[in-house]
Length: 315
Image 1: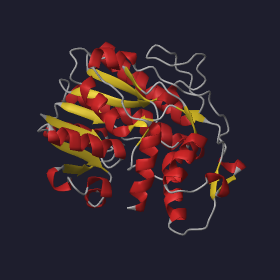
Image 2: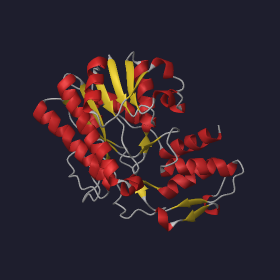
Image 3: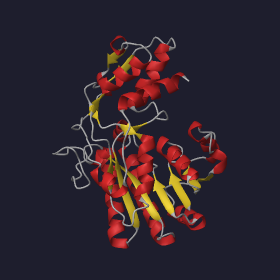
Image 4: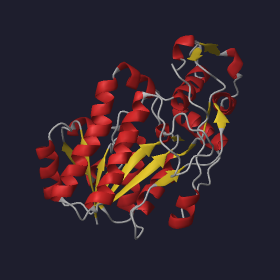
């Protein structure tokens, strides 16, 4: 089996690559720059076993040519501009990459590799101002930020290409998921890095926005197993990947600072500039379809995951 992964250097892409290589797959990845991708810490252990290609998302001909030459059996589209605050500062770039980039890839698949199975990593941000909780695959999209709007358009395009063009195309509607490879531009990664740094002698306080904000946080390593399972099913469909449990930013602080014996209250300061223009209602997902149809199970406990992430920073 041949798999092609976009966003292969991120936490999801790297964990998925390791999983597929363990199953005997030949793994290819689209990257911005091959040299920097091969030196990426997330891929350091498996880089020699990967085939990487620098590719621009603005050129459909290049994408089509790569699809034709690689001839992947499975395509995992994980690349995206995923930072909500950045989507406010660059809404055009966010929508071009997330929505139109997905469209260009779908067109390339339709013309050059229509038999391939395609997975798109959608986001819980598509639900935005949802009027009920938990959210399911049938919950209407009501995004309330540019990032969510771009992912909603991309998810709708995936569904259209499945229904109209007959592609085996799946949306994995992913709620927040973390790991020791999570970047510091996300609040969990930011907190874990700060706790480790303070434990090691750094004296700067940690600025944060709303500590009461709640999210459905899961483990990225379990999520990528669901991505793979979704393409092994007989029929293409959309799936929510979530834990069904809500935790607050304060819960993350308590787990992270507690892991290194610190009281977070002594180190955190409120920064109003970090508040989002519009804070959505707590997003909580119902993964029943993924559990029933795919046999996907989420077992992790957030407290243990945050502790692992913090101790990994010490290492």
